[in-house]
Image (tube, rainbow, N blue to C red):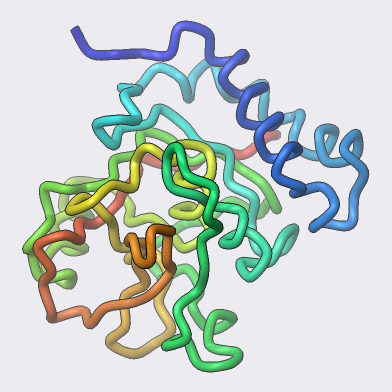
Length: 219
């Protein structure tokens, strides 16, 4: 039997509560109440968003609440990630030269909602693409009518479901590119999550390609 979310609204509230607990409101320059109010309209979407497979330990999530860099910068969200059962904060690899993260934006084929927060739905960390050439994996995902995750979406997935990032089942984020051959990715380094990148033609046996069925915004 395919695992499902039993109570999508309860799961949404858990995700909001987790972000509040991690200090997202303060990072956004908002009070806890203002932050909760800003994302509350998305609660109307979760009944539909929560119908997909939901088994985080197997890398499948029905929906995840995404806070974009317009609300909280990547430099603030990545240190708020941890591995499952650990406390050491995630970090951004030094190979991102100063200012380069701002250039990693959604690709032309990724249709993002015009909202500072939204839901990414039917998410899969994509370990089936471990060992595949990243460019080929992204093409296959597009052929399936799915969309590669952006950096913000990958961080949101890890933040809300730390169990998805495990040894030999880490994931690339092909939905964000900067015009060169680099593909951002999340993997484990020094017993913590790391945001780094790999080359689009270089396969890695421990990096899949995360994807989603779609995105949903309020209104």
